[in-house]
Length: 366
Image (cartoon, rainbow, N blue to C red; front, side, top):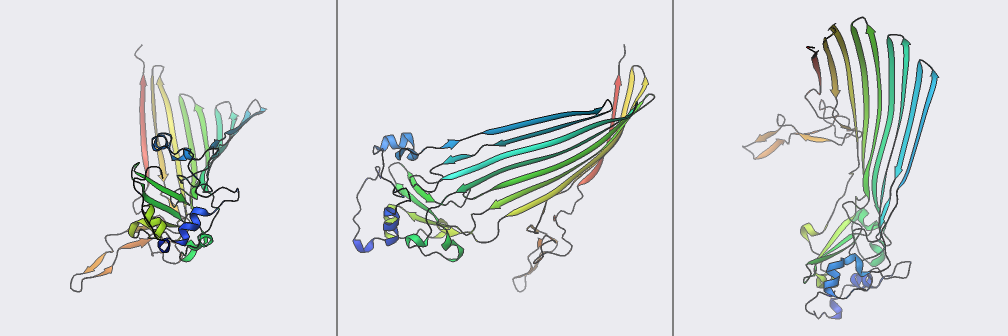
């Protein structure tokens, strides 16, 4: 690195064969995984950023959009409108979360689409009926490529982490520029994202009867939030400085770790609402509007019961033996293996529904 202020002498016996493999391994394109710098001036490197030290590698972005509308008149009393919109805007970064190293490019696949159908029917001269249904989908998934595996460069990692290339973090790589050097498959935002779906249906009627205008309606929303995390079982291997990296001295503790287990989550919830309202025109200059609304905002549940909470009423501690008799943890009841009886699928004990009265007065003194 251009900013290293002093040379360090290392005997050949101290050099890690894994470090040698990483420094000399080539990608299918023939380029080195860690290429030579094209900007050797430290000030310029700091000014332009470390991604600029390799020429000819450009980030890309694209946006594709589409929109369609259909309006259909069945009759003077029945009309329908259909709308659809889609957008796809992926972006690519040849470096991803790596400062220098090539081959670990990242692609963010972001897109959305929505559709709706609206139908209005006049049943009688004073009674109309409207129905609406719609669907919305959004996704954002970050995918990091990996040309290597841990074993291909001689690294011995445990469990499922041995099947993937880790994230290598070299802190204090360049003390002059206070710069670290990271490359590989990152644990955070490396191969993960979210997919959100929402369905909606609503229906309402409007009835004019004398001086009364009565309206009533019902709405239902179903939401899905899918968190996909494929960064499980990918290790992070840290080194405190370039010398320790060359010698293979791993930075232990919180600098080197591996997350193991299931981290995908599939959340589900429903929202239901209904109302009835009357607009009563008592006099030409005085109108009273009154009604009531009921809403049920249901909390999220997880499809596989992967929800946990702490219930203080269940916690038990034996001071005489200094032992915890009951840790107070509750797991969603729909967890087939560890579900707590009576805990419910959402772990929420308070009601999420309620009534909301409404009252309004419109008066024109003139």
